[in-house]
Figure 1 (cartoon, rainbow, N blue to C red):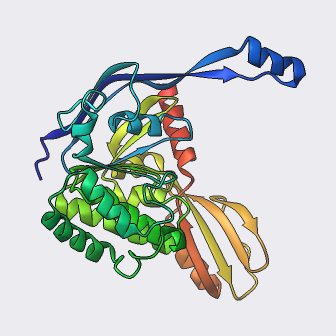
Figure 2: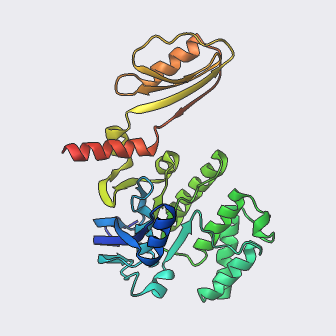
Figure 3: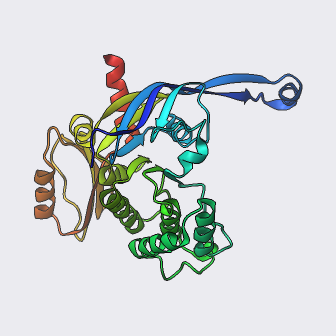
Length: 332
């Protein structure tokens, strides 16, 4: 993989949306019709970054931060107010048709598969849209069907497939033309743990085997930790962090949330470093500061003092991490 080749370049990118301000009541309703008022929302505020070939980048932030807007400008769906974009040396707004052959997109809440038709029909349709050589298309499709393990249900109507099955087919559809860059907007939203795990592994495999560059948006720390090498955090349209995921965890993730279910009545935990979130007779959920208390020490103590039926460890919500990053940026 050529780490020096830049495949995405964004410079001083801006996007503002004009939205109507609604006033309540009958009088307000009439004003909205005859004399509407508008306000400007700065969705993307002068951002710049580069992405190198083969990178796995997580582009994260709270709702309304500008993530999806940026991805839509990168894929040519939206036009920026100002700034420049180059994706695979193409301008997405001026050369959308050429760009479509180089990128694949998955928007978790906006499926591309035809709902009432089997996936194979959508695959065949896309092969015509992309003007693919039919011999190469069949070879590529066979490979993707095998890789994503969808052979059993590609002839069933999409409406009859589970969410996990549909998303596997969405991935195949987005990769059918062998794109060099993949934009994923909340690709695991609504999925259960097992399906998420499988999708994450498949993204990593595609990146490793085909050197596909991936930009991912997600609210799920599991997605970010499992997939991304690099994290870009955007908040209020501005980039507040751009570094490796390892550095993000080391510098900003200082809490863990532990949940335990026991066979015995849980004994009192004697430490000031634990913040109890919820406790019942046979279960407890609490937060620890990993800067002051080792996870291994806590787990060893819990197992020693209790008959543990189940135990889980999770990161704090991504919103908390972003708030911490943003707070430190404001202090500086």
